Image 1 (cartoon, rainbow, N blue to C red):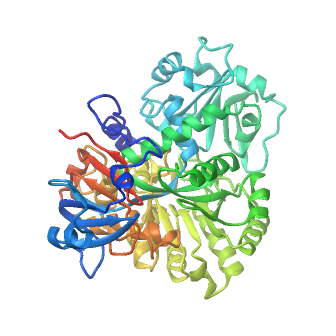
Image 2 (cartoon, helix red, strand yellow):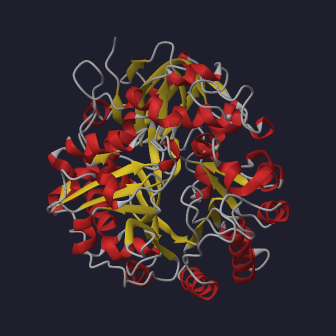
Length: 566
């Protein structure tokens, strides 16, 4: 959703009408659940990621667990004569694919709001706003997201005047594609009481016009000034958006999501669905440790349900590179004197880390700039101490711009690198302009992180990017956009192999959520989470991933998405 690759693939994954695909309704029992009998899935190839039996042709499932993996005859023998048999033809089955860093509430909002990703001009933005669907309103505020000034002919931040006159009386709030900046019109600024006299909070920026008046763009912590005035979605809106987000994730082949900073309202809704047995995907929720919701999360402590887990906290140290909010050690190469923003002071970050570690939470920290990554590593190694660091499995969310020494420290101290392949392919047209030719050598450096000993957990950061796993696998293997540019890939020495990429969405994601004993591989006794694809993600030419299709998504033995037979 954030860059060229996600936008070009969008048409492949958003089809949901007649003749496209059939979704198993959320919570509906499947045939095998009704019959209570085992099911045997037969495919051209099953990639188990189990070293003892890396490939098979059939998979037997019973009571949400893998019963047997092997030949058709072996699976049928294990399942018994009452087994239901599902023929998947020439599909390749892989262990359940998990997005290790996404935002379900954000995705639900993106699916219902005005979608601005892929716009190439301000005129196109205004046209989309004028065609806004009714679902894009919260109260009388028009909500949208996805704009990226780097995709416009003149790559500058927009202003109040750029939004036009047609919506002058309607408050409009538009998230930048990275979620770290807002663009508001005059009515929204008025409702939020933001004037030339308003001071930006620590860790935030109010972008101003030459005369000192607010331009309409708020960055990082300054966004809160406007969001406090934005009406919350109704209960019905919220539930509808969350269902849409879960359905969309199942449709693109996800069996699980690590939700990076879940608000308390969404968590309570998911708890209710999980208890009722209607939560359709596995959700590893990270408590929102940035807002006041953290007080209740600290009081409640970790949670383990059926498909819902909360064992981690998400903290955000800096902003994003695209909006120049990422905290750098030296100034931005394209903005002398500016080093980005720390959204938490070192003291406050250490205090929150201490509090959540004391309550048994894993710490996952958003850190994009090298200054933020150094602070993260210093704080957590001091707080956790060796050898506890490895046991605690602290996560570095993004780990984009790092020093060579911090890459070494990240791996040596047992940190998990939670990285997003499509971020690299979206950012590559302008990232070097931000940080220069020297710092870019240790940016988006997946192989260097692996070489240092870090476990890679791969995700998309949806809705910043689309939650399209095939797009993520393609970007990981090629470091190219959908048209195959640049030739050979951007910094190609950092590409992942097909198996490394698949492991990042399976084994790595499972390890990052303390679930490697239950998920990430297909072997007897493990959870029956798997996906059937039209393309082999390991051996097929990478370009084939761009047209590949998800045929079946299974979570705990339950089919949550099945494409129509052709």
